[in-house]
Image (cartoon, rainbow over all chains, first blue to last red; front, side):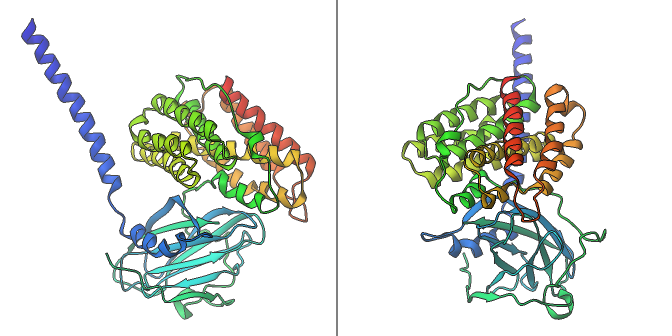
Length: 156
Length: 268
């Protein structure tokens, strides 16, 4: 009886361990560094310091982009705030571009922030009204492969 | 680690023409109705603090008046718990805005309580503890950061564990809590200029679409009938007038609608 009980206990322990290891593996998988996000965060560093710095959101967007193509990201922005977006892909040959449109699809005036690295792009926008805006990200020069992209943003 | 070469501070974007591929400039206009446009299917809900910061630029507001102080019950219904989790984190942001350290500490403990009900306590513990410790020191930037991490950690954990429906409800609860506080402040101190912050019908439409896509199991019961009805009502109420403002009457109704729904989530 005791042996049987111990056997069941061992099985139960193995089952629980297996579930725990599985959960841990999933967490590790998702916590792997995203190259695009890392590049975007590095680029953002200088805007996150000082008294009037941007406040970086933990939320971010990512995906895969085909060279020469563009994607749109919808985001609600609020008048009187200022927003900075950073878009990055790992491929050094890629030329990243970012621009902002209002809900009518019209280009909104924004300030481009440039870096030595062409695979990182950033822009600052002060929306003149509250509402939905469209962030347009694109790779303007063809690279050999699709790129994993990341977009982060901050506000002040 | 390679340091970034930051060579040019600001270059004004000219009004460009043509496509990126040809001349490197953004097109002046894009056709949003073009079905071939690839829109990223991921809604990022604005933080309450993002919205409150804009309102504060119009003058000091009495955020302390809208800090919640409710007893949080645990419910067996995960969907309700997910909404509640979003609401509680949102209350945390309101307490940060009001610089109310006691409220933040209470909310930090409530967050852990509901995290247990949602089986995300191990993921949340580190951040919830940091919220309480930072509130004790009145280190508001750290409290804000850890609240944002709490929320994002739960969303990430839910999504990677195929619990995306619950993640959507957490986001909805967070948006609702911030909107309730904003509408309440504006109702007490209406200004046409400030009311434009409630100009969110497109965002509500997106939230409504996400909600409608949930499985029947995830939105079972009268509470979720009320959620759907309230979202529809809010979408109508948040449409701005010609000057971009939301009328005082509509602001009052938005405040009442969000109050009622938050009450229903806490009480039912």
